[in-house]
Length: 390
Image (cartoon, rainbow, N blue to C red; front, side, top):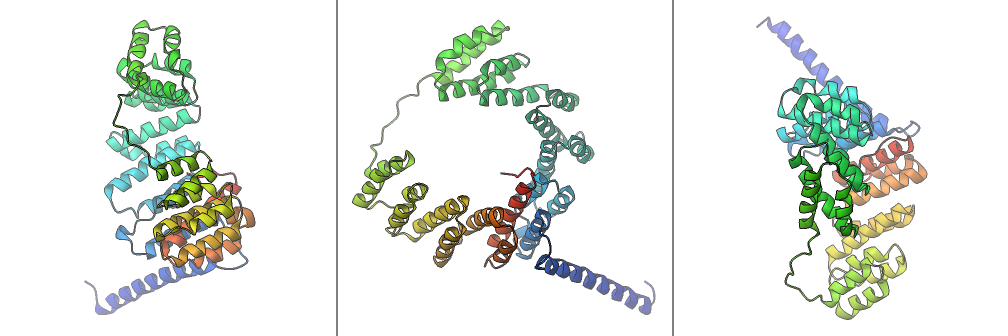
């Protein structure tokens, strides 16, 4: 056990270490607030993590968006530290797979593979390997993706990712050529998806033509058979008569705002924010006039949040702040973190981070401060040409 004197020395050194660590953390947070220093996206994301940790949320889990931004912007050591704060095993496994995917999307294939080596042979390792291969397909490296997936026998998964890209671009011949390199059961799922896409594009009649271009006649017959199910007109369902308020919301969705507003006012429709939020883009004054008729506080809060986000996206920061402060007066916290994020992002892009950081620090809740910092980090990362997570 040692002498009492040695134990006292040990306790003293431990207390000193704790004090130094706490002082360093406080010093770092104060340094972030120095007026003349350069503000970086990495520092803002670190501060966002600290905000979340201080909040006492269950498991001290930082928001997923912080993790995503750190990964997308290439701060992999910070990501590893953030991932240790995830409390649930499912979240920790997700973080490994997600980081491997984002690193691969960033072009760091070797780094992505190195970080999952210790999971080789496990289900997590297999999922992460597949995520890397799919990311390589997205980057246009099909051969590299096939090499990554080969040890697991995941060729069809890689080809499916390529075919889905081709379908999304409308390259149906290319997708069918890719499907011909796959097993029939894997190709079958793609045929259903292709039928859906053909229907969306109004190109149902192309099925026979596309099938005629295929080399594998058995697979061509399967393609023709399976797409028939997705192209078949849906069975008639019970028709519900649309009311005037439903028509108003539909009119707003297609830009017929005068008609929509008339219906809302004549029928005293609830949830006028559904019309006003869309109207703001083309008629801000009319949209604000309409929202004043909202009798439900939550409906009014939704409209103000939509206005603030729309104004921020147009660079009208003073207007966005006006809507945000009106939203604060309603005591509706639910939509404020997202609005704080949108304002901070657009404001930083327009004027730089210094004034925005002071505003972010003054937000009344942890969620608003955290999301404002994330928005700033996104803007700074974007300005430096970095990939920004959605």
